Length: 368
Image 1 (tube, one colour):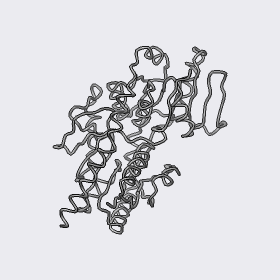
Image 2 (cartoon, rainbow, N blue to C red):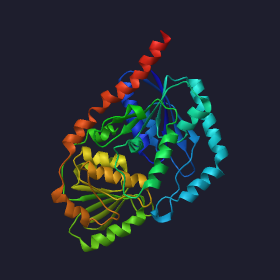
Image 3 (cartoon, helix red, strand yellow):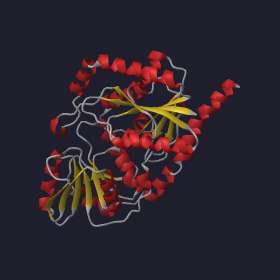
Image 4 (cartoon, rainbow, N blue to C red):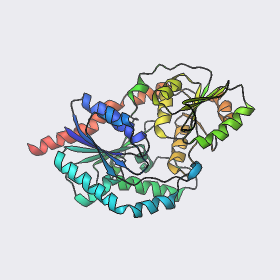
């Protein structure tokens, strides 16, 4: 089959999922004809994506989430304002998607939660089937458990998920754990898509906590806690460009510039991970058998859902702040879920191929 990817460029999760999927499909003899990625001002698509997806990569203008300064959470008004302000560029992005698809003529489109995927289906009425892949589609499942008093937030995030998958043939909902699929809702529950680097890691347990923060301003919370608990060794990854790649605060606290290989090496050897509640980072820790303390970004409902689902799945504990004492108290109670999680994960390749190759068989039946 000739397959085209549509990939949301916001964050790294959807990009790494696309890379993992490309490896599965290519190994099965399928062709990734192109990958189209939504970009916006200030959003840089990391070089590793083009290197590892091993297909021509096209960029188009797409909406993005605007965050308040100092990581106070999502700025909804600014996000909507940008959407209205740049609508001309976004319409041009939709035209570029359509023109590229018409030129390539793929047998199947796979969308990784790209905002324009559903709009493309509605506006251009393409006859090419589309499969949509994301953890967010699990939130459409009737069995998903949401945070209390969140009806409005549920409506908003699920509306967006439906928007990204309008007129799609199937939604593949990535999940921490096995849940029955709902064919009536076009939802097939599948395991996560993880980087090969994680799968090839050998996990050990050394005496330090690994901390990942989305903004270096959060280091104030870490330092404050550290000064009261100097005996706990911490290695923290941040985005502070004003200091060296490795900033040694003292003997038991070190800050590192974000580096993928270095981070994964430390993840495989830490006692526990303290991080924001991104789906992929929690999955990686679960695969390596590392307890996780999940700290959702403020006003980021999706991360609140991830944290609750992660707790239910046995990943670890959640907190509203980087108070690492919560993790210290939790550790003796943690039950390692890595064997169960790995068993679920390793069923994924066969499941993905079954769901995707079914469209190739339909095309063959139509032609014959």
